[in-house]
Length: 194
Image 1 (tube, rainbow, N blue to C red):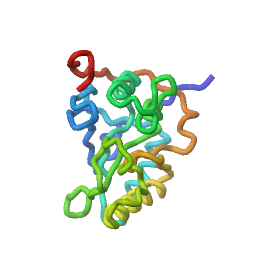
Image 2: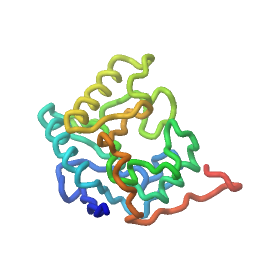
Image 3: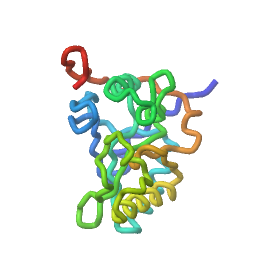
Image 4: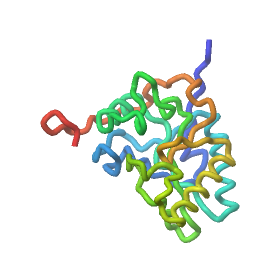
């Protein structure tokens, strides 16, 4: 029997980290907040890797900005309704690594407090958001490579379709975690999410 490991409150553990939980705001693919609270939580194994990534970013003169971490399974279902495309959103039947507490969405902030431009926004679900898309300008490629290096150095790996998404190797082997906080169902227009 696997004993459930408690989630770590990232804001408490790493007060130097910048956090903007996008799914607690309207700045996401649903166009509305879906988290009832802006809690940033991670499995303790992912928190250990994040600690290394934070230090690597600091040494290079950057700060990490967390956009999402642990995600309730109810939120995953809402995201699937907004974007039913397995290239970008994992179906609820499979279970997101965010819902295991083993995945994190991040970007970088420079020493002047500016968020690095990665060529697309967070949650921009198209080919330009793929980490190594060849049609992007060299500046965006460098910024994405820098983010990858920071996260890989901590022990995370990326995915082929989202420059902002990183997870522990073998993340899917961790158990799904019951919803820790509630979600807000986005308003529907004619039965379809906006």
